[in-house]
Length: 106
Image (tube, rainbow, N blue to C red; front, side, top):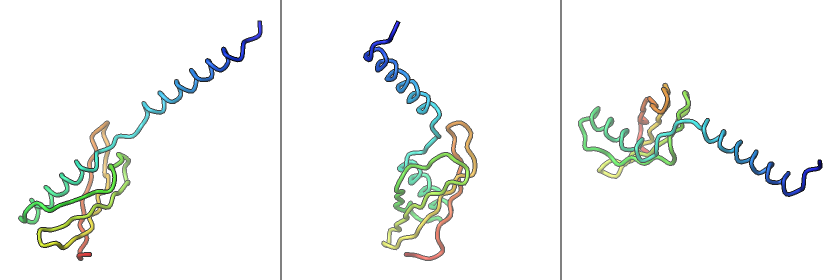
């Protein structure tokens, strides 16, 4: 018995929806950019003994080892530094990373 065009279209849409759900389930862990910025600011303040600087990051940190993100630190005196955040390990949704501030202001 031949299938109607509507039946074939419905099956195609169902298959596409199922594929989209599978892709969504395999997405990488991410840390929101505001959370990364806040953690970076806290760690740098603790290391330097200075007040917590203003740190902004342009995007979320993707949980893939080796991925890096460039953030911007603005100190209370108005000077700014670049800060590199680099993913060192990922365990489920837990992302560990190193922080390195540039040596010179920009």
